[in-house]
Length: 255
Image 1 (cartoon, one colour):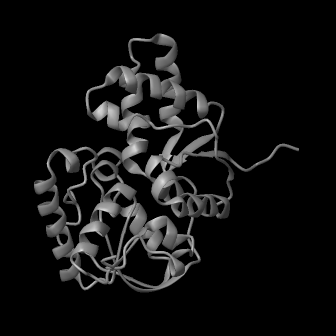
Image 2 (cartoon, one colour; image 1 turned 60 degrees about the horizontal axis):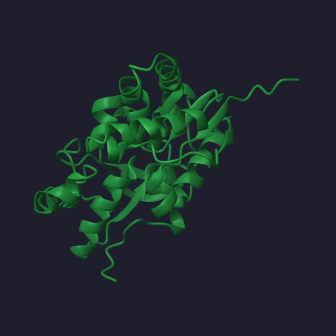
């Protein structure tokens, strides 16, 4: 008898793999709860976003081919990052449009690739059973919002978390200043943008800030920590999976 569960490859992304593996574990837990058969291909690598954004298109194409091969044959490819998934969905076909064989494979991967929160809400109609007392505000990352249209999906999912109150901060859709290599090239501007984001978080009255892209969350957490803020920072997947009790990307520590 065939397995009725969709076969899903988890695209764990570099930042999750290196800095916050708990986001990957949370993603696996959520996908399994949603009824998926989850695998984590060992041969996956960087999607090539830093190279692509820096104009190193040759390297970006090489990495695109590697990732296309790694994710071949799965029903879906799901990642907890709008910025990385947007590269697979929108930019791989452009990168490989002059190579007929690889362009077709890139289009195939693009059609199977989804950001985690939108996949859970839009495709699997999943609703969580987690609990986390607190007041949370959500930061909309630039790529997820503007390239993939992710706005209401995380908020709908988080509405199902028991004891969690959601409040909207001012300028929730405004960039936090991370922007991949932007924060390295323009650190002063980035720090000012992060400070404004932190001010909006504090003004909302939230004691928790959530998001769907780890790069943004690390940037926001770093600024909160430098300012000695007690606000906790989580990837939304950690909260939805019921893993937030013992985790926080930032808790206002100065150590």
